[in-house]
Length: 340
Image 1: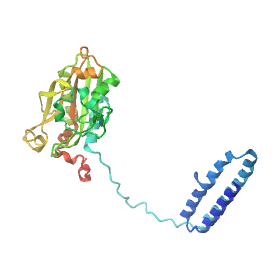
Image 2: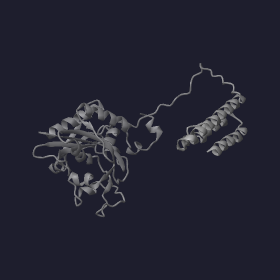
Image 3: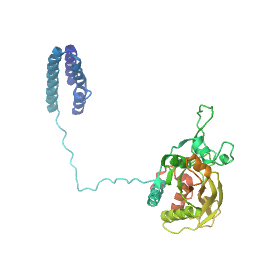
Image 4: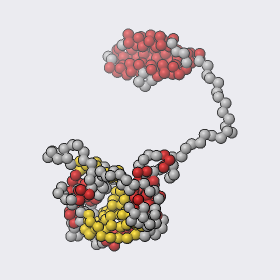
């Protein structure tokens, strides 16, 4: 160790001769005396020495450390500080650009506040989901034609049975069963998040979009409870009464099922590409939770009932701000984001 310490001292002196500026001197100090410096690492090895050697080598190491510090201090005096640059504090400062939230983030935050005030939990779920939670636990077995309506992206990885069972979730509905399994009943929860489908992209369709799943399970829950909650959220997010219509629908995980449409706020019901020229926009499908889904969640459907809905968060944002092309939202175009 004696030779090692002396070699460190010699190397330091050789490098010190080549130093030309203050920054290089600081780097040299860190190299030898920093937390991971060469001399520091050697000092940490002292504990491995025999007792009689530890004292001798410790004294030598401390002496060398002291000498290095003194030489660095002398060298610092050789470098004159650069004259301070005059700063006129009366001049106006540089403008600091303000960041902008994506409109999806804004609306999602407001919705979470609305539902929290109604006693709903805000939950999360995995975007890479299993076939079981995404389909089977929602009463959509492999042979069910509803899978064709949710053409999705399967991950190229097989399970123990040799099946491809990992998908990018097509909706946020898988958290229905996950939430019931974890929290039990009574249950109130919403799940905001991204979903993915192999869509033909146009002004009102994207392969990546945002939803907000809602689920409430308790005793004596009815469709009227569902419609009341949906109207409350629309009033809260738009700040006014919005014209809606409720029509029958079909979803494997709800029975009966409904579709709640709102009059297109972009064209005021006259017809435009965003509403497929119908004047109405399908916004919130939902219905009463199917008994089989309750069973998958470990809930007795004879004792409990519930409603579920899948809010089209991306479409809600389009209606809120009058955005006529869904592709703008995830474009990352600053000219678009700076408007919010």
